[in-house]
Amino acid sequence: MKTYLVTGGAGFIGSNFILYLYQVYGNDIEVINLDLLTYAGNLFYLKAIENDPDYHFIQGDICNTKLVEDIMKTYDIDYVVHFAAESHVDKSIKDTDVFAKTNIMGTLNLLNCAKKSWEIDNGFKTGKKFLYISTDEVYGELGKEGYFTETSPISPRNPYSASKASGDMMTKAYSETYGFPAVRTRCSNNFGPHQFYEKLIPLYIKNCLLNKKLPVYGDGSAVRDWIYVSDHCSAIDLVLQSGKLGEVYNIGSHNEKTTLEIAKTVTEILKNEYTIKIPEDRIAFVKDRKGHDRRYAIDSSKIGRELGWKPCKTFDEGIRETIKWYLNHMDAIKD
Image (cartoon, rainbow, N blue to C red; front, top):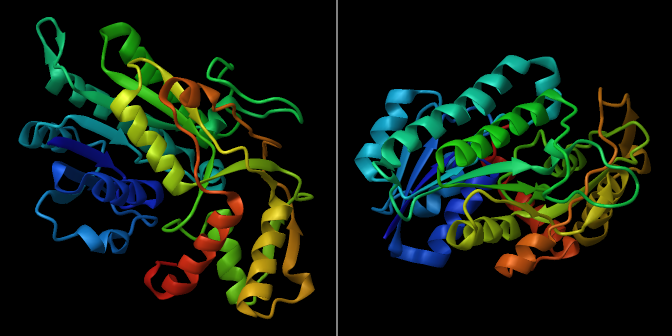
């Protein structure tokens, strides 16, 4: 039985990953979910497993050294899967301090606690792995052509991506300096169930239902590569099982969409498939975000070539499943 410490497991991707683990491995795993339950965390997502004897929720801060050390000691953790992060770019522009604290110092604390727990005289205990969940945003802005690869320079352009790049590079440094058993992943924009309403797709769904405007930055031409969250979870699991220590793996689906395309897709599905009345003027172009990166796109051929991963869910399938989930769970999600 493998024991996982999942940080931020009550959040969007973390909760989906925990459910994915139990779907795949059943009673052959133990999961400790460490989450501070800030505004974007919600234990409702995990009600299906809340009474499982091998699932343990601990409300706490990844910056709390004693707490993390106690968890590492009590449960003999095999895998640390580090999702916990402040993740909203707009918030990072207004208040950088909390991003530095959680995303940089919190990551450093987890690295130190895992290092202390796993270290032995001749290196580290076998079978241990620390997985840092990074983002394609650490690469910065991309032109109209080409893709970021794992060897592309790190060049973040906003406080959020800079804080994630710091944790990314600190994890790399621990691998290089101490031989610490770590691996990193950099994923494109996730979408699917459990995502908080501040993020683009859930915001658009909610605003359509409440007869509110759909804000679109600038002219709506900013491009992101979208991946359905279950595909991301399968990639993370594969990297944990087979990823080479010290390496980094890009994870993406080549579903490049502009913000305006996302807005139009959501409204068209709600109108045509759910007969929800949405006026033509629902889209509202607003002042562009400061330092707004125009395009992210990543080459994920490495994880396919080396580990055999590929996404299973098309964007059209994923967006319809996402909309259906939100329509069925509007009352359960914190606003």
